[in-house]
Amino acid sequence: MSESWWFVLTVTAVLGALAIMAWPHWRRYRVTSRFERARKRFHLRREWLEVDFLKGASAASRDRGLDWQDCEFEDEAFFATDRKTGQLRAFVGLTIFFSSLEDALRDRSAGTSIRSATAVFCFDGRDWDTDGRALFNLNPFEAIERFKHELEQVD
Image (cartoon, rainbow, N blue to C red; front, side, top):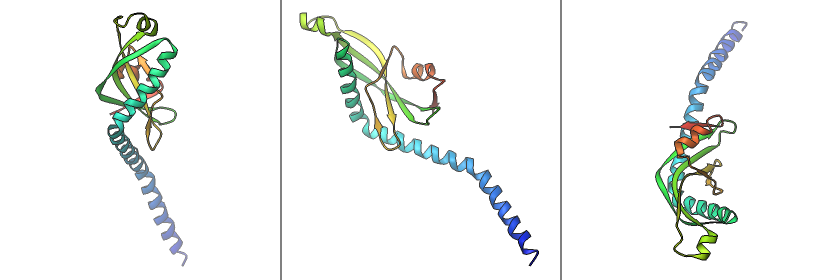
């Protein structure tokens, strides 16, 4: 009977050591599968997300006296995680065609300005969302690089 507690202690120690060694692999698998589900969800909902982005961005630009005439999204999306919160974000390049509201009211044929930007989308753990935030004059890779102290690119 005095020898059985050594056996129980040894088995417990071995199982504990195995659990400690397996933990990083299990966690990496869990994070990877979560990312893959989020990426698939992004591609499934992309058209709706683009519409939501346009609504938010055009409303914000009207407050600044700009009228969005058109917007063209690039096909490729880049993904990064927030270093503090772990929140997943998607960055999509876009070209924006807009004119000032004053020019549009005066003359319909007023020149259209073209700007490049990056649209930002956030994943809350269940679904993607956007507030219409655009990072002007940056492509998605440059945007992630500029905020590299806050973001970590995901492959």
